[in-house]
Length: 177
Image 1 (cartoon, rainbow, N blue to C red):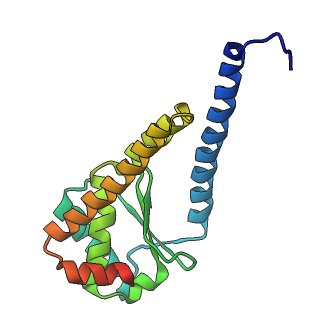
Image 2 (tube, helix red, strand yellow):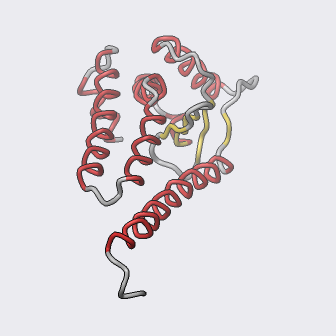
């Protein structure tokens, strides 16, 4: 380090290191999702597989109800315990394998919530939020705003589920299980 350099000269390299670390974190998360997808099974309509047909029928009905026109790939994972949606241009909805044993009401509640994220383009909003946090990594207000945006996205999807006729007590029970 050159002691003759002023703090102004260190500003850009320090900012660049912070941005690079957070951008790499975002890239790593994306790659981990891609790797996780390889261990999943894609739910397809197959003769004699009543559970797959039931999940696909509920997915189609829920997409129709919410006006989701994008093709959503439905995945099942033996290792996961929580539903997850990702993908901006090719959305994927991952359900735990145990979802095949869930009641129709529970599957509908979960699909409503996860498809609401797709309908609202929340995955794009999440990417943009993460990029903003990487660009402004030094500003705690940006991180606070990002956290609040995430909380409000989840609340909006929960509100959509409840507005779709799911009883609040049943939805709370589904979330606990």
